[in-house]
Amino acid sequence: MALGRSRGRERTIDYWPGFVDALSTLLMVFIFLLSVFVLAQFFLTQEISGRDDALARLQAQIRALTEQLALERAGQDDASSEIGSLRASLAALEKERADLLDAAEAASSAPADLSAAQSQNAELGRQLAQQKDATADAAQQIALLNQQIAALRKQVAALDEALNIAEKKDSESQARLTDLGRRLNVALAQRVQELTRYRSEFFGRLNAILGNRPGIRVVGDRFVFQSEIFFDRASSNLRPESMPALDQIAAALIQLEKEIPSDLAWVLRVDGHTDDRPIQTPQYPSNWELSAARAIAVVQYLAGKGVAPVHLVAAGFGEYQPLDGTDSDEARNRNRRIELKLTER
Image (cartoon, rainbow, N blue to C red):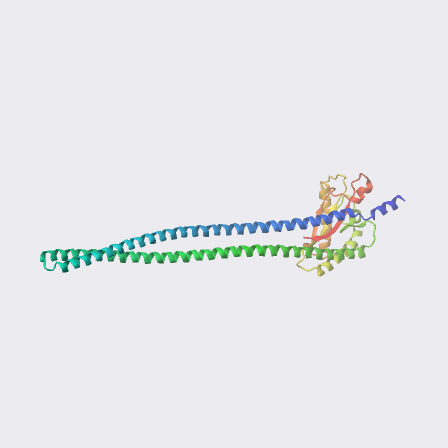
């Protein structure tokens, strides 16, 4: 009667570990998405910083060119003022020359006065020529300043255009990043759904293959096998009577490898668990070594039967993930187990 009650309890489905595993899976997906978002933000920050530095350099060049343009305009204004004063002097000299010519004509009867007037007229002509040369030089300087101003305006226009292009590229980069994040979230959700579907199909096959054998239970999204099915006490050597069941599991995995798309990263995780009784032998100094060795033994057997090693993972948890935390032989029997879980890589 006690044995019947014990088996009844063992076959009871415990949903709490499955709920915890589902939350763990969602948390891992969320952490992965958060990591992708942080990396994307980091790269965007680097790109924006580079753009900001380029914009700052362009703005500094624009300010320098603006100052240079102001100086050139001030020089042009000075040259224009100088030309105005030269033209005024030229007009005064021409007027004075005209007055002297009139005076010379009026004093044509006085030879001495005429000679003095002619001498003064020659001097005025020389000064007038000098004024014309100075005016021509000033005009050339103004023309050169106008060319420089035109070149500066072209440079300012080119820098404005480069600045607008940089701002446009920055906006496009942010839009692409937002779209990339959205598509990544959709792709991850699709991958999770697709893996969940294959996981359900695989566990359905295991249910059909293994049936309701004693010592085998479904806990959440994993198959749980009592360690005694595969191993003797304190041993990691597979029992011969456990190999037919492992052969069937390997066949189901090989069929699953043919069905799951190659771009979907998945693994069958084999977890080894022990009870809380301490072990210390030359081969297994602790329960960690024993649980890991048992998981590795199962993985190596499945690989030897044709399952791709890239789809297998062995993990040892020792006594630190118990299903039943009570201090009883029944709890220890439940905690000594091998778990199979299909999950993403």
